[in-house]
Image 1 (tube, rainbow, N blue to C red):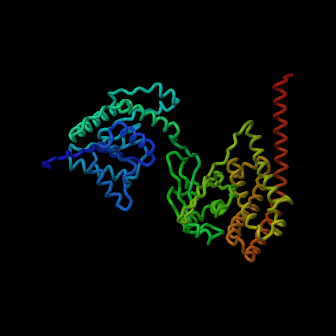
Image 2 (image 1 turned 90 degrees about the vertical axis):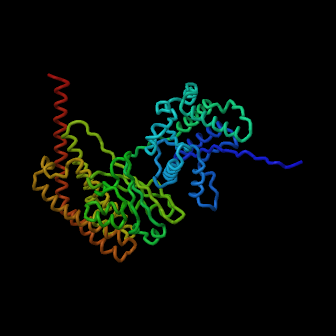
Image 3 (image 1 turned 60 degrees about the horizontal axis):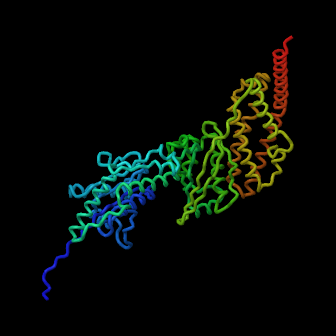
Length: 501
């Protein structure tokens, strides 16, 4: 028998390439499953998730080859942006080039949830047909109310693809296969919408962060060599978002830009609370290094505008390249509401301040009394100094909030001469203490250097105690007397109103 001439028809494969942002992987997988179900095996190919990439070969070259063969380029878009230099942005650009060089053969379609991506706004797009209102439904409610028409754009598009694949099968010398029930376009799109709904019901639409947040990025090896402070090359990376409450770095009077620890120390050196900023951030980071459990989340700072914040370390992340990242939140401190008469409120706030001052600097049991501090263990002095700085900041914040940082506010209780004496005694001592504390922190562990600083700090505290004690005593007595008068007046007024004669 002669062999004769026999030509095998060329098999034409209809190819779809799906491009997406990594955040949309789950939805993209549902889209790919929909298309694979709708189209017959062997004569149709759906590529996504880079599953076709072969190790050992250049990825970009492999993607280019797939795009050259692609009939329909699908962009899945839910609003999650992809960097323009990433694969998604590059893939769109490359396919646009193919469409220009081979017009009429290729097609680009965006499948979107709430609006098409900017790169395809002027081209064909198909809405997936899910609204945010629908996501309020239960799965059962959504399923029972879901109705997909054969006339919907995606159904019509799938039907066109099925027709094209059917023609390719016939040209290859095979009979066109019967369409299975699950391959009906409306059924495929119905299942797709259901899968997307199930996924979106369990995902986060948005996150609002009312706190301010920064990330400290630093090498672990550098932290080991700089155990008492952050390395100068450490980076502060502010978290900025339209959903966050203002600029993170505004706390320090800075713009929201990355900055090294050295530059941060330099540019904030003249700020009144700079020392407490440095100590608080350093303390929360070092308290978690290398892998400690007892994180120091007790730190409190005053912002550039006097607002009080708790400093809290939320996560400490270690990378294989030895980098560490520390996410630090600044949580605004509670502002108590005021009630009743303003005169009573002012008195109570004033009394709280002068009594706190007394308990801190004038009472025998306080660590900050001069004679007690003079006997403090040198190893413990840096921790005591740090607490002293924090309490000074809190006194300052509370005085500002109560508007009691103005001398005139106190003249309702004592004459101006007493206020002048308190200010002249206290303010120079506070300035000296704020200058000494950073020195103590800087020489932590060096006992020979700490000892003279302890003596200097004790002398300042003792001098302040002698000068301020009589004035503080007088102020408390006069304020208590004023409070007595307010209470008596209120009781008389109340009695007259409730029990008229």
